Structures are given as C-alpha cells and as structure tokens.
Amino acid sequence: MNQKPMFELRCMDPHYRVLVTGFEPFGGNQTNISQEVARAMDGRRTVRCPWTDQPLLIDVETDVLTVDADGAQRTAQRIQRGEHWDAILHLGLCESCEQPRVERLAHDWLNMRLPDNRGRRIEKTVLDGLGHRGCWLDLSIWDASRFPSRLMISCDAGAYLCNETYHATLKSLCASDHDTPTPPPALFLHLPHEDRFSGSRSTAFADACLGYMVRPYPVDVTHVVAMCLPQTGPSVFLTQRGEKETDASLWEFPGGKCEANETWGEALEREIDEELSLEVSAQHPLGTWFRSRGSEAFAIHLVLAAASTDAFAPMLSVHQAVSWDDAMLPSARSWAGRDGEMFEFLSEALRPMS
Image (cartoon, rainbow, N blue to C red; front, side, top):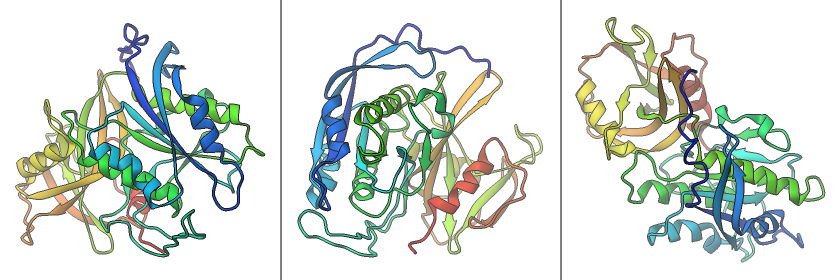
C-alpha cells in the first residue's frame, strides 16, 4: 500500500464524542466487569491513532444498562430520539472467555439460557426477522500488536442481552439520518471475568478499539457498496466482470461507488438499477472490507438486499455472466478484490437459527 496517511494534522482534534456502555451485574454475579470498565472510561481520554500513533482526544460518555428489555433497547431509543456520537462501544461480560472478544455480527435471534434481571426468558425467537446485522468496520486490518492481549474476532455475540443490545443499536443506526455513506460505527466487545483478565487490561483493550473506531482506515477511502441478494438455500446472486472492465472476468457481488451525500442504501439501489436494470431494496450492511489498489483505497460495504418485484431479469452492461451460488458451500471461483472473503463470510452472516 503506497498511500500516505491523511491524519497527521488532525490527530489532536479533540472533538470525538463516543458512547461506551456496560451492564449491571446479572445471573448471581456481584459485579460486572463491563460496568466497571465503562465507569473507568468516563470523561476525556487519550487513545492512540492506530496508523500514526499520535494521540487522539476523545470525550467518552458512559451508560450502565439494565439487564432487561429496557436496557437492551436504551441506546437504540436514544439514537431514535436524535442523539449522536462519533462511535458507540458496547461492553459486556463473557463468563466463558479467557480473552476479550470483538463481535463482528449481531444475530437476529434471542435464546436466553437464564432469565434477565426482570425474570424475562425468551427462547428460540427472532428479533425482527430481517436477518443478522454486521458492523461497518473492517476488523481484519486491525494490528493485533496494538492490543494488550490476543485480538479475538468473533461472529457470534451469543443469544442473550449482549446480542439483543448490539442488534438494536445497529438497526437504529442504519435507520438514523446521516449524509455520509455509513452512520457512525458501533461495536460490541465481550470482556472476560476480572478473575481471568484485569480491569486495567480490559480498559486498555477498549481504548485500542476506540482508536480504530474513530480512525478506521489508514488513508481516506472511497466508499463502495456491494449487493448480497439471497434466495432460498441460501444462494446468492453473483456477477462476472466484463472482459474490458477492471478486474476483467473475475466474479463479484455487484455494486459500485457511493456518490457525494449518498448513503449506502441509496447508492446500492442506484448502482444495481444502472448496471443490471434491477429494482432492489437495500436492507442493512453485513460487513465492510478495506481494499487498496494502486493509488486508490476503498471501503467496500456488503449490503443485504431484496428484490423489489417478482420479475427478476438482469440486463448485462458491465458484466458478462451471472450465477446463483450456495453461500454455505466453499467456492472455487476467481474473485475480484476481496469478494472471495465476503463470500466465505456469508456462511456466518446468513446462518439460520439452529
């Protein structure tokens, strides 16, 4: 990668506002490490820019959530009322974890192994029936050496309050007003019990996450959308680039660049209409991948979509072929960019409730 980082003159900008949440104790525990870490982070903090190592000043607001339906929805409701932060980091306790775990997906289900603090226990129930939701950050480019312990990236936030909270926040952010391609990022960080992992190390781990959340890429990027259109199976719609196009004859999830002041949803619907003469409805992001190509850099957002009509007859202009491939099976296709990684990710992102 030969782009020059664009952040040297901005790294002392103190105007980042971040929300960090934890949970009250539950399940017979007298304490909750997420509550303690959230409280410790309250106020102005200095974290490091992950690309330049220069200091970033962040104003952290903290909130300790109740372990019940109200707590799971509280951040989402604040977003709906118009509150805004530059990033949202949810913290939660993972009693079985030995190391902190960054969650990449919020599953569309609730299956509570024990009641919440108000006695609610819901089993094998979908949250909204619209599918799993992913963060719009590329965790694969995070440098593990910047963290105080092993960097574990997970696609399973569980099926309890942590997952419910994460799902609700991502959903509300997607529905919020924003004139940028994506809303501010949200993540869920599971922390081990303090008997296994000290509060100070957990706080340092959360600080490292915040650095990447407010500075997600090493250079300024062009935002790109890619369509994940599934049908039963699930199979997903793929296209093969034309012989005269960039990445000629390689396979991809179709899409294109976001225009100025265009959101990911608006961009996807426009690009698919222009390239394939198809009407689709953009649903929500599943994940994001950073790609560097020559002097250009891209953030590619894989977006779940649905066909707007039963008549599905793509017209090819920049593509030479289409296919429906089973997303649960390995693929031997030759892929454009990081689309092969996106395809592999769908075995988690489209996984049905077991």
